[in-house]
Each structure stands twice: as C-alpha cells, then as structure tokens.
Image (cartoon, rainbow, N blue to C red; front, side):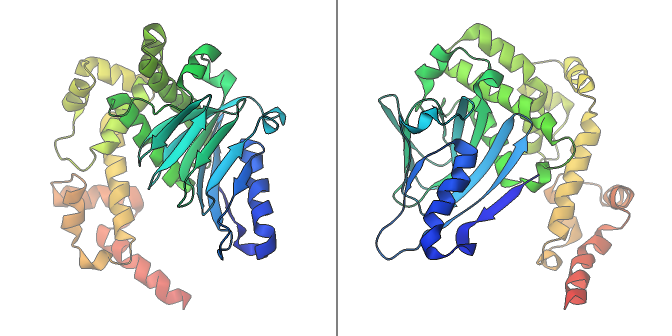
Length: 324
C-alpha cells in the first residue's frame, strides 16, 4: 500500500520536526537542515513496501540530510540505501568519499555509517531501503562501493535505474496483492549492478541469472511502442535463443505475447483516460503503442475492458460532468 504524506497540514513552526519524524521512520534518525531566509519548510513524499524492499520518493526544500555517528546506533535494522537522483544535482558523502549525482544516477550508502546528502536546491530523490541480510553481499564489498556512482553508462545500471524509476513513479500501480513479489527480484537486480561494478564475477553471474526474467520484462516494457518488438528481437538483445527465452518466460508463468499485448492495451487505455484524449485519434494512440491492425485492436480492447476504445475515451468527460 502506498502511503502519501505532506507536512503542509502542520503549522509552520512544527513542520521541520514533523519531517524529521516521518523520515526517521523510513531511514532511521537523521538531522535535516532547511533554508533559513524567509522560506517555510516544504516536504512531501510517498512510501511503499514491496516485500523486503521499501520504496520512497521525497521532494523537499531541505538542503542537507545527515546521519551522524550518534544516530547510527538508533536500532534501525542494518540496511543499504540506494538513491536515484530525480532532477538537478546533489552530493552524497560517506566513508571519506563524496560523489556528485546527476539525474538518473544511482548511489549506494549504508545506514550503519554516518552519511550526508546535500542539495542546495532541495532534496529530490527516489530512494530504496534494503535490509543488508536480504542483499546478501559481504560487508567488505559494500564498504568499497558506498558513496560511489554505480556503473554510469553500464547497460545493467541503466536498466536497473529504469526499473527503479518505474517502481518509484508508480507507487499505486505496484501496490496491492502481488506487490511483495517485486521486492526480491528488484533487490537481485541491484545486486547485479553492485557485483558487476566491483567485477565480482562469481556473484555477478549468479545475480544476472536470477534477474533474467525481470530484465527481459523491463526490456519489453522499454520497447512496447515499437511494432517490431517480438521474441526474436528480445532473445537477441539478451544473447539467448528464442527457445530459451520461452523457457525463462514459462518458468515465470508468463506468455510473452499476452504480456506485450496486455501492457500495450494498458498504455492505450491510460491515454484514452486523459483529459486531452479527444484531441488525438484512436488510431494514432493505437499505433503509438505498437498496434498496426485497427480492427483487431478494437476487438481485443473490447475483450480486455468490456468497451470499445471510443467508449473508453468518451467515458472520462462523462464522469467529470456527473461530478459537477
């Protein structure tokens, strides 16, 4: 379940302390600095638990977050945080290392050591908390990689950042029954990035194998809009035969064709539900998401949602009208 919070409901005098309490429940105790010249404290966010993985998005005008030597003994379960920079730039410091982050960069830092996150324009990060025992990596490896940008430009790191961004920007979509099943595969994907970055080959191979299905689906999601997306192309992108691809999908209980069709239909439906949907033709939306046969598109859309694409597009204005 996604938990939304916004400290605007507090009095201006109580907002800074409210933010510290909210964040303490997620990351353990931290000190937080806010602008001091004529600006009120601003902070909002959303948090979801996907099994062992906690996903959190924070937007605030806080300029610095510090976990001190004193606060690391607060009883929080030893955890690893992975930060994903949303916009702008920030700096993460830990263990005598300091790394600047640009949008899309991944960085790891540990709860059991002091750290500092700085952004003079305000904190804008997705971050992910993983219990150390679920990541299952030697502490010596983690200490080598804290406050280091994780493999910038590496295909696995880029895939992982894309996957994590999906989780963090669509909290409600990944909530509910089955959400816990996303947690451990996501952790394994992060494990693959870390071990690949450190060139821990035996651990990397294990992680890459365990995350193969997730990486296949993330690739398919990233290329949904392309009509040429098919088993052959996906298999080639992952250096495997089509036969092995289907075996991997079967183990996960997934039909590739059904998965692609379902997610393309979902994207179309999302577009039809937008206020400006009437400004775009149904055919344009369908082709944008990889459908080339319009009569077949209408048939499978109705089978999936019990209404035609046009009826779906026209439904939203009718709902708005009835609310007035």
